[in-house]
Amino acid sequence: MPDEPLVEITGATRSYGRGANAVTALGPLDLRVERGEFVVIVGPSGSGKSTLLRLVAGFERPSTGTVALDGRAPVPGRDVGVVFQQPRLFPWHSVAGNLDAALRWAGVPRGQRAQRRAELLERVGLAEIGGRRVWEISGGQQQRVAIARALAGRPGLLLLDEPFAALDALTRERLQEDLRSLTDDAEQGAVFVTHSVDEAVFLASRVIVLSNRPGRVELDLPVPLPRSGIPADELRASAEFARLRGEVSTAVRAALQPA
Ligand SMILES: Nc1ncnc2c1ncn2[C@@H]1O[C@H](COP(=O)(O)OP(=O)(O)OP(=O)(O)O)[C@@H](O)[C@H]1O
Image (cartoon, rainbow, N blue to C red; front, side):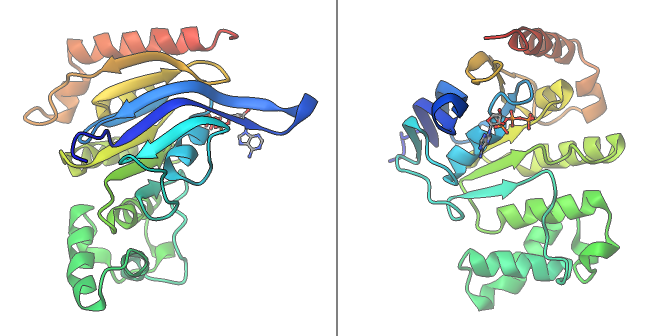
C-alpha cells in the first residue's frame, strides 16, 4: 500500500522479567516513520532506545500494542538493514567477502553479486580496499563495511544503534557526512540511535527524544536543515543548527528527570 507508513508503532510497550522483577523498558509508545525520513532517537541511558530498534527489526515482539513495517509484522533478518556499535564483521573474510556473504543472504543471484559488491564498495568509499582482510582496515573503515553490508539487500529501512560511538571525533564527523548523503533516498527510511545531540541534529530530518525509563516520546522535533548545497562545517556552525541543538538538549535534560 503506497500510503502505508514505513513504520507504525501503536501503543507499544516492552517489559522484561516477571512479578517483582518485572521492568518496563519502553512505552506506551506511538510513532510513525514515513519513507524518506531520517529519524534520530536520543534519550537517557536505559530509556529503551535499543529495545525500540529491536522491536522495529522484529528481533523482539512488543509486550502490548503493535509494531508494523509496511503494514505487517517485521520479519527479523530480512526487512531491515541493521548497523550496531561494533561492526561485527566476519574476521576470516576480506572486505569483499563480507559483502558477498551479505548479498548471498539477501538472495542476490550469483551472477549479479560482483557488480552489486562493486557498487556497494563505491558507495561507502572503499572501492580501493575490497581485497583487504578485516583486521587490516581501521575501525572507521570497518564501520563503512558494516553500513555497506546493511545496504546489501536494498532494505526499505536502515536501523543504526550508536554506530559511530566507538570512533574518534574526526572519523565520526566524516562518517556522519557520508551517511547523510548515502541515505538521501526518498524511498528509504532510517532510525538512528545516539547519545550525541550534535550527531542527532546533523543527521536527522526529525529528532525524537525519549523520556527516562520507560521511554516515551518527550520531544518530536522536525529538523528543517538543508541536506545538500552547504558544506558540513558551515551547517554545524549555523545559527539554525545551534537553535535546534539547544531545543534537543533542553528536552534531553528534562528527560533525565524521574518519570
Ligand atoms: N533482555 C532484557 N532483559 C531484561 N532487561 C532488559 C533486556 N533488554 C533491556 N532491558 C532493560 O530495559 C531497559 C532499556 O534498555 P535499552 O538497552 O533498550 O536502553 P537504551 O536506551 O538503549 O540504553 P543505553 O543508552 O544505555 O544503550 C534497561 O533498564 C535494560 O536493563
